[in-house]
Length: 372
Image (cartoon, rainbow, N blue to C red; front, top):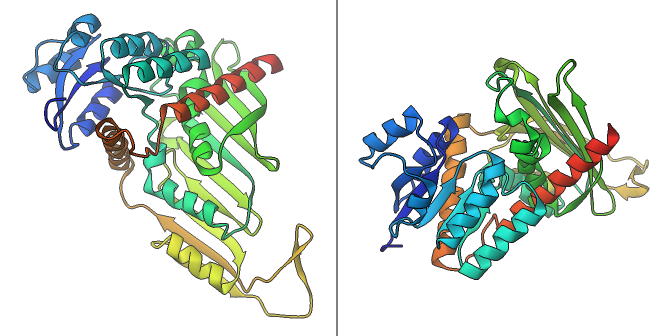
């Protein structure tokens, strides 16, 4: 890299890639060097606006000495071959999700990055959501006890995914678990560690070959069972998501694909109530009920507890979804650049985490196929 400037090369340039690149360019010290692998009109327009030459071939872009980091925004089946090309050319690499279509491909990419002393990672920006970070602190504090169970329900829109879109072709996308589910396998992994997929199912839209619904159960540790559901069948106006974590002494519910608001309902001591307010400083108390002390024991999981209040809190991020997504993308890129500049920098997201999400997604896909 020349001085403090990171010159970005982009392979693939659809609507979403343009959004990502425009957010990346808001990061201080990041500039755009060129586009490749596309001749779309929007790509031509983007190059004219930024004073760049017309989109190049992938080979010509990677041969340039002034390109430091390559963002790969092509469909998933191209991530592995294009990342391997970029790493061989000495470039750092950020892929759109998933990192790769298989664990073997991901491992090959990680090994190549290690040999070249270069970055390779997937753009799994959920870890950079401040609300996700706060929930991670709630989990780690044990203020609500241990996590026992949870689920993520993703009622997604297919309104912009016409029948010929590559998303529906598993040879190109990897399927719903691989193309989409990796974000949430990774989110849970960041909160509570690695898990094992123990069951999975899929369903096909009647009279078609379209896989539109998938479901998996993952065991974390010895006790936590978590359910993941993704269904692509809603109108855009009804696209919605809910994630719930059940604890020993309450639950936390989050809403939206990139969670922006939610609720805590719990039975806690005064000390733990104060701790919750500290961990979620912007939360609003919407209900509280004092528990009268009596001689009757209050038990849970065959253990006596000493709660003093039943509380309900709500919390919300006022930032609109697209802007929050952009903030997360910028935080992800800045974290990775800090590692490029200092290999001792502890990143929130690593290639190994992205690989582990692929491992869970491919295992879920295998079990879902076996269930048919």
